[in-house]
Figure 1 (cartoon, rainbow, N blue to C red):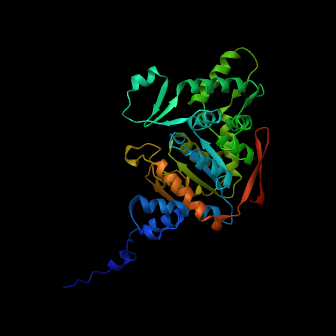
Figure 2 (cartoon, rainbow, N blue to C red):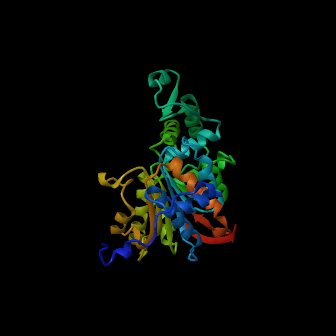
Figure 3 (cartoon, one colour):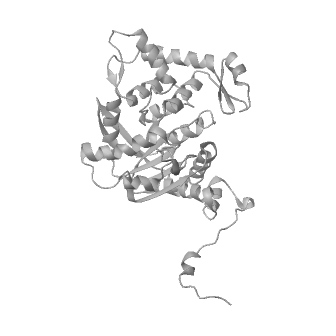
Length: 354
């Protein structure tokens, strides 16, 4: 006999619908179907909706892209380059490693299909480095380190932020397929708050060694903070897209708090937030901490639309990017932001839609 259980219907409003791959006409369709499934597929579909909501918000949020992890080795260089070129992100914050491997490929380095079961001692003897199931050329890495050190000698002998220095590298290492080169061409600022914790730092150390006791370029990390905070403070709304976690996620989130202290930016944290991560919250680390937890710090708005998908970037990011591209009629054309820098001070203007 059926029992009368008041309130049951409130939980049984929408059934899970099986994915029908015979009806999929593109990645946008696939992610739309994911929205009626469960677990990480549904979270990934929500992440796409969050990104699209930010792109179509009439208040024109500034979208920050945080990058961490072996993204270039995973084959995501063109995906990242395309996101910048399409104008679906406005500011990039990255680990130095991602940007270094972008330069490594610009000067001819390659990533090679390998195996996680390789004999690593044998690889060491051959000057091959392993990133899980991918090989890179240690000899070409050394060439890249030395080239960065040599090129840095052309930078003005003064202090500068990572944003200014990385723009310089993007203008020097020209490559239609490059992340830094595309960002420089499109006028998108790229920050790396832990730049020396990468092989770019090795190149800078070689530069330092050659210029000890002489006038030289000095990387000013606190100026990075000041420049980032200005962008946050002067944006009516902000959105964050985190691929991985690490320093980029923490730095962007801390930036919204710094904006309150330094510029009196009262009110909300980031209005839109999405993250792809393989980290989990129960260890207490930042990379796996939930976007809900960030609300307690005032980093994410109380009313933010948000989604956190526990999925590895080599799988999740191409699906997201493909969904955005399939749905581009929803957000194209989108106005771009023009960042005009005078020393450490920025003015932000909207440009024509493109």
